[in-house]
Length: 233
Length: 286
Image (cartoon, rainbow over the protein chains, first blue to last red):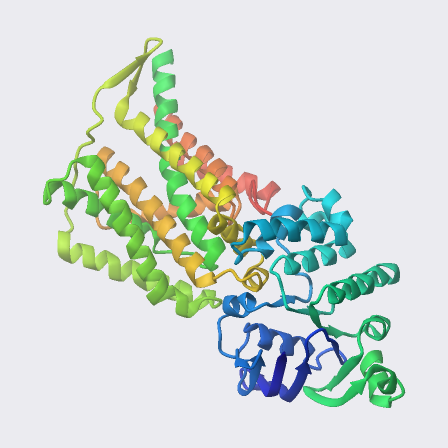
């Protein structure tokens, strides 16, 4: 479904990631783990088209998407929940959620998706008139996911959704991710939280200083030293 | 002071407020969507006044059609400037500011070359006065209040109820988050620039019907516009309205009581005092 073929990304002259190859198949939950600064967020930004790749190719459904503008990539169903949520702080929950459906014109479907999103996160329904900036960290993460779901993703990319959340909230988060995956949406998860990754994903890539150093099944990887390094920073 | 004099200076103040608000709204739109302090906004405004002038004097338009055509034309100039001069420097405010400063010189000199440096004027078709409870109100000022606040309401409805308006709000609050929802930042920037420049042209068209116009009239407008948005809170529409009302009323009412100089002094003193207590401006965030 999503294929990253040996992509490299540079910020100016500094190399952020080199020759990264990642494969996500339909219905997968794939994780990318690595310490801070390993280049995980850069990978997702490149897929979303926020930064250009300097070499390599990104394919979605067999078509090249690197070089396309961000809004085209979103309209293909490749949607990102960015690091730090990036909500619209002075707009209320409902307006934030509605902006997720910005590119969609199917009014009836949007309505039923809204109902589904509120079913998944009932808390957001209670808070729908409240400004996004006034929500708790956990609620903000729910809202960021809800907003992304309104774009009708086929593949949802999440950048460190557990950041700054209490363990009990992270449990809810992993339930939500499984639920989303069960509804037929593939997930590409960038994380540092070992518990969350082990809980939701079957396959995992380990990134160290801009390169994939290991990939494979979650259970095998957990025995490996560089995996422990990635999680412990 | 008698009732009529008070009412008239209040109306003067509101008319000036209307002009300030229109100018400041454009500045604030461009600032919050494109992240640029558009220093040449005053020149856009000046071009608006000259368009109205030539449409009336050379093309034989009457005032209202001239104002409408000038507004649309100046809006299109804004779209052109966004595409050619500002888009390449988005996310690079220093360079954008330099571009904007050079646009002041370029636009001013083009107008100076084409129209000459002598002040020009045209008259408002809204002559006559209105009597309300024995108070005499000049139509040519009242119409500015009506149009200014009418456009304000329209802009508010546009932002509140249209998709593009909501996209504008979203970009002003979280640019990358907005892009990730599929909002086309290029398109929304062009819309913001169109609206901002068009509003400046409306303001200038009316100012030209009250006072004379000249190629350097933009610097005064820019100074007032910047003062208004700093006072009200950068990037805030409500702030531009409140700031414009305060400064407009000071500039419109005080000269009748004391002198023009006092009005300038009080206006900027008010800004300094308000910013001492609210550094983010009256309606600003953080």
